[in-house]
Image (spheres, rainbow, N blue to C red):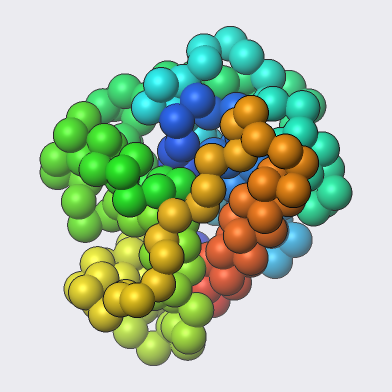
Length: 186
């Protein structure tokens, strides 16, 4: 029998914490909740977080379109403590993943790009994992199997709405895959 985790902490990270990471944070929380799993705590931060700022308006509009709610969001800057207490860290890009690991090198086996973790869990049936932690460990073991795949969600900050739409769509698809995989083992 699988026992639900008390609280599995997921941290999403981008640069300013006003576009990609809050969109992923809010969508992941909504998707997990809609799948009936509530043992997850989802938060976000930015390596160069625009502390105290709300979501960027175009990113917020995309979040609403995708079924999320930007209300009350406040950006914050990433620190080592946030990474150390997270059970899973999902970054917008490979470069941001590298920045996270400079802050907290011991987080390597639980830090992935959003698209990388989605790719590693998309065909997951839960056979290799009995818990979210097992799912993360299995993904870490198979990390090298992800090749020939673009692992970055493009930065839409200051870009046209079409870039916000593309970025949000990529993040939303990845979040859907990740939420389903986590729900199977929660």
